[in-house]
Length: 81
Image (cartoon, rainbow, N blue to C red; front, side):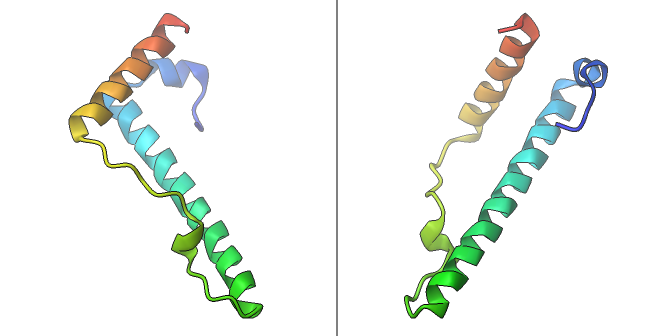
């Protein structure tokens, strides 16, 4: 995550949520770069593909579900599970 254990436990919930969102965005960008490379390889060989053809479809979740999931994960981490 890029923070020490001491820094991690000093994070507020809002800071932790922002950190997780940033990490998720970075993962999505990395996935898109790989998918783009795969599309280029296919296209060079005559098979028309777009980067989106290689990405998983995102499931839509409500903001409430996302917030509950984040809170439950944070509680579990604090309890040492």
